[in-house]
Amino acid sequence: MDYIQQLTDAAYPQEYPKEPGSSELVQTDLVPLSLAISIVQQLQSNSITWSVEDFESRAEDMEGEDWRKIYDEDEFENALSAMMDSHDCNSGITWDTVTYYLNSICKK
Image 1 (cartoon, rainbow, N blue to C red):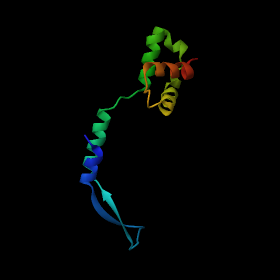
Image 2 (image 1 turned 90 degrees about the vertical axis):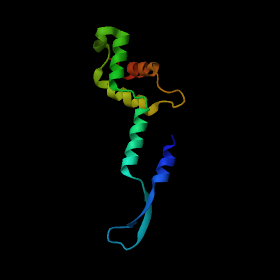
Image 3 (image 1 turned 180 degrees about the horizontal axis):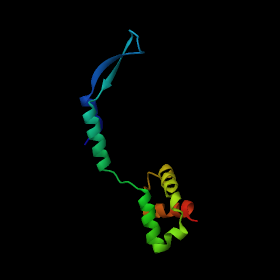
Image 4 (image 1 turned 90 degrees about the horizontal axis):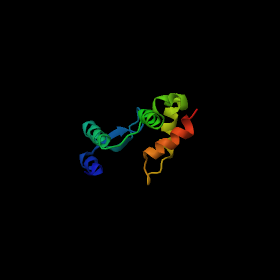
């Protein structure tokens, strides 16, 4: 589905004052909010997400019930953020990537 084309087809021109109280108008294209929301929802439903819970799950898979003795759970959010900020879009994110950040940032 071509979302850009949907937005382009649904756009309609609207004029607004350039500044509050100004008689000079500028034109912009608007899209119905319901269409924009629908497209965002479709994109979200077609995405893969990683969460703090994935770091907890991976820690438990690797270390068993004693994972809290090895990893600082308070650092999971930082590890997730670092992973998302520096991931390679050509390689993607795998469980090995989660393991790397878990050991690099969260290990006590």
